[in-house]
Image (tube, rainbow, N blue to C red; front, side):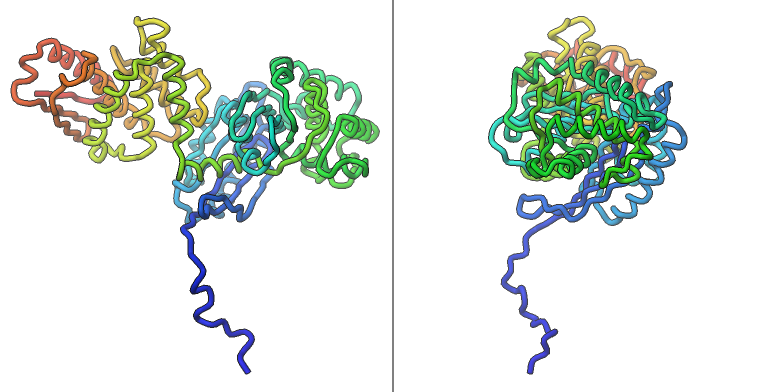
Length: 513
């Protein structure tokens, strides 16, 4: 008789082993930190596990706009724990995004510097619009209703409202209201009074005045809520009314929950089955925001989706492996909108990439992301031309600093703006911002390469630039043209003399023959 526990050596021999890679996304939220680990198999994302840590970072945002030491320490302690979970992960397969609390904190850089010491993965602070876009992607990949959908995500410090169809967004907005910030404003002592609710609801409706008319004009077929706040509200609504469609909530349910809160009188006495101890203090604020949304946007019914920001990040990581980068589309859209001279942009791009190729190893800028940022800066350096030719670099920098650029984190957008701000004329090093994820000397070297890429194409013509070689060594950059070519180009030579003086501000020495 054969051993029932024996597994034949040939078992699974004929099962196809597909390429798969593990990826992770961490959402550093104002209320909680959410980690999702998945594997990408045959182009699909399979969630392996989720971890949620309540940190309440936004609780530490003082009236001066700074995060308290205690809040920062809570965040750092949580990152240490998460770092252990991510041991063995390739940095390229982990994406970390931070939202409202770190967007708003005046001392966010202090936290990010401290985080680098305990957490080995770069943290991107993303804009409200980018947060909204990624939330929508998380929902769109897992909910397949036909027609337009409205997605609402109540976070600790902000609430996102997005309308879209399929994978494309029609409208997206991040409003300054969240369950932690509204708790601090309207329910700080834990008292649950009708007057406090009315104030919180009115305040949220005032925020919603910025979008309510436009959103109602666009319209939607289904409304989907994400985030823990909405999840618990929908679960509780189901307990209160057995006639409710499963996983759905309407305004009547929300008002009933508000009455129950007021009957309890205090958050600690809120004895509704299903509310956890950590959710109880911020429940009323989240409920007030949702009531305001239902009233201002005339929402009839909302269903819940567990997939949101971190899943959106994951799915986009998968798409980056197989599809064009969303940032490429953003850059192309911007170039079209500002009527960029595409032929000139391509000349500058080609030359700048040649310079980068020859300098990248010696200057230690041999990084795909840095190359991409330099390339986008080359393509977009003249967006400011539509404002004025005078001080064009300032206009370009301003546009790229302030416009919505889907796919770009705040630091990436800041780098784009910085590169374009200094692509010509005098360089004021004091105006170059400090970056969290990038050493200042690397920023200076990228500025130098873009400046040379522009300078070498100053004639705006094809076919006039000879083959040249570039050598980088420490703080030195040497360009060699064909024999006596520069002698025959006195204007070019004068431009290089000026540039060699400008570039000294970056701590670099430019030589040429």
